[in-house]
Amino acid sequence: MPTRRQFLGDSSRLALAASIGTLLPLGAQSRTAPSDKVRIALVGCGGMGMGDLENHLKQPGVVCAGLCDVDQKRLESAAARVEKMNGQKPTLYKDFRKLLENKDIDAVIIGTPDHWHCLIMVMACQAGKDVYVEKPMANSIAECEVMVKAARRYGRVVQVGQQQRSGKNWQEIVAFVQSGKLGKIRQVRLFGHFDYGMGAPRIENSTPPSELDYELWLGPAPFSPYNANRLHGVWRHQWHYGGGLLSDWGVHLLDIPLWAMKVEGAPQWVNAAGGIFVYPERQIETADTLNVSYAFEDWTLTWEHIGGSQTGLYNRNYGMAFIGANGTLVANREGWELLPVMRDNKYIMEALPPQKSAESNHEAHAINFLECIKSRKDPACTVEMGYLAAFYAHMGNISYRSGTRLKWDASRQNFGENKAANALITPEYRAPWELPKL
Ligand SMILES: NC(=O)c1ccc[n+]([C@@H]2O[C@H](COP(=O)([O-])OP(=O)(O)OC[C@H]3O[C@@H](n4cnc5c(N)ncnc54)[C@H](O)[C@@H]3O)[C@@H](O)[C@H]2O)c1
Image (cartoon, rainbow, N blue to C red; front, side):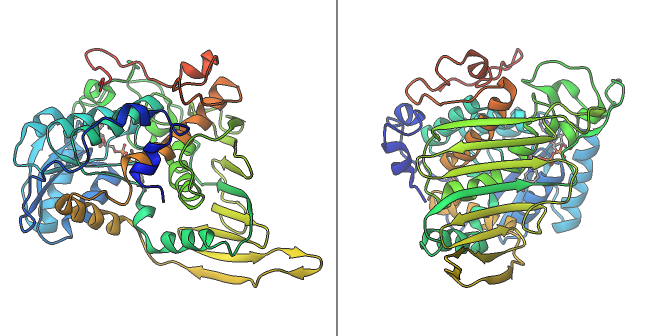
């Protein structure tokens, strides 16, 4: 796995290195003494935010000091869940800026839709909080870059919610790939043929419900009239809030080959093709069908998703295959197996039947974050790792949306003369919100 120094130290790698090299090292003081309690707060009390919060609250010495949501019903239901879980009554907030003013809060979990991650994370770092930010780290390449700078400049511990990084199952898989037993790896295939990813049925725009502060839900995103089927849970299929299956699931799956193959920068080129081929009547902007190729000097990485299908590859609906000269390692969260490759009528290595993984990595990731809050060490998924996985996902989407093959220019931090692609690197924030400049 690349260290922060390795990742940032080579000028051929992502150019964000240049701007970060002079920043303060990680190590600003923890607000908590090693023996003290960790007072944690959640911003965004949806399915994943609550899951993350509960994994933290299960650990000894963790107190829920604040909850924040722009939907009053969700906020109240989250408060009731916390009280039932451990009897605690956190302070409730609608506006995350008020929560960040609370000096009693040590760390913040960000479980909002993706278009909010950057602003809340940067402001939390500026307020001296450590941060667990859900994946994808942000909804654009430029926001991810700002977030790397913020974490390092303010010396905060920032864990990105790519929980596989804390999973023993994935650490073993990565170690196997790196052992060389598969022989020369020529291709890694990632696939997600999920029973979702095609959005919700199209419905008319309407008036926001009284319990929702819709302005604050939209935040920096451009104004669009309220529509329930672009909101909770299904925002991920609208470009202003998410990136479809590639940035939703893609960052989890992309993260593994980037880690195992020790990738530290951009590929030689990226090319994508796809469309909304099967669900044009759904409330969806992102592709229901997408293929992306990433080229490296001596191997290729491919992503494919087919939203609304459960029929995948290698008898799995999602996962990955590391294809080596000697064998193919197939893996997903449920387990892994080895498929031997035949050469000159002989199998080069023995097959390994499916190895089941019972492990959920979420809790281990929360434990790792809590340990790092105290030790001030880098967590299992650093901002640089979150950046890299999101960068690959966003590049695939930008290639698809611009209809062009992309080559990243690390010195200019853009796609060279490709205006259509460059226009999708940085989101335009709606006033009064501004993309932080660091
Ligand atoms: N790590 C994983 O395996 C995993 C799995 C699912 C989702 N996620 C990520 O978790 C995040 C949340 O996803 P979800 O499916 O729970 O979404 P969701 O829509 O169910 O929940 C998001 C919540 O954030 C609230 N919110 C929106 N703007 C807010 C603001 N400004 N301040 C406070 N609250 C605000 C919404 O009202 C909603 O309650 C996303 O980034 C998603 O990609 C990660």
